Image 1 (cartoon, rainbow, N blue to C red):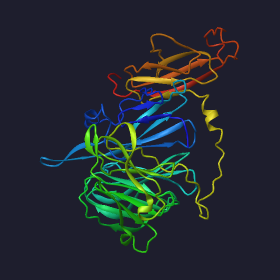
Image 2 (cartoon, helix red, strand yellow):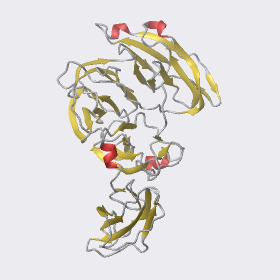
Image 3 (cartoon, rainbow, N blue to C red):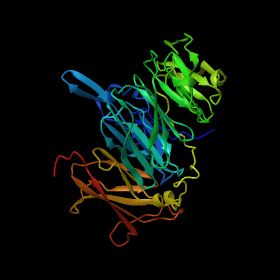
Length: 452
């Protein structure tokens, strides 16, 4: 399996494939916690999730959260997410390096569990269900991402009441029929998942009496075997067994290996089923090693867990990439397994529009110029038509421009341009009201205004 890196995030900023800050990719997840971990990245397990926008192959949504300090009683503080945000990335911008169109838009405003944001394909094989849990409750929030927008949040009461907000891991089976939540201090919850309506059912709670302060979960490619990390141990459970708890098998116990630099145990923490069919487990305390389950479809010791057998080029701390199963197709035989679509050429149509971002703005503003434009003039005017941009801005043979928001409540952006055929790029364009071929009007709101 191969592919090209497009962008990534550490919860603080969005970085392009050249390992450079993406245009408008700074200031993700604003909070004191983010400021504290700005240099290292956020330590939230499954706190970021990237999904395709579905209506346009060049656009992606980043769902993300940070932690806020809240005083629940005098001198008693908790540290929990209070919103799930989403951010939009368009890979056409900045000459194909990508740019953040808008960021930090709240989509769920409530106190949530720490991390555990994950997703599963809808039974139609196209849309996405996104799921997270409310803090101090039995409430699950779900969102449905479609080509037409993000629907929800929807609320369901299911499973145990989780009073604490500590870490854990959430995972769907490869076929999307099972959902697992493994929570520190609250043990293991197993559900059936309906890919048509996004509902959880057939709740099964399994209590572990281990000494772990760090947990993880992953499911085999055949969706049968569940692997549970409990710091010094890894357990296997058969999800098809009549009694799942009775199938519990210990397949690994920490062997005492230290990573020599730094000298930390290579313990068992978060895990992930990779595209090669193997399950990888991080150590959770700053080492260069991963544990590998080579044959996760096999029962018992035949699954072949090899401790600290994969060495990374650098130190890994407390997180692991949060990839859903992008290869899951439609669920045949259901009432929602077929689609009628006509949006295959959306990307091509949208590339010839003027895109202004971020909007609302409070600092730098960027504009993507239509691809058929080779020379143009941009004017910024207020709501009564007065010109407020000092210099005229001319664009020639570029795709993106930028300027700084002025202190006005609202402005209009006028882009005047005349398409020029390739081979005539040296042609001049005289700007006046009589020879303009096209004009596009965009409305921009400026935040934190100092004047009216």
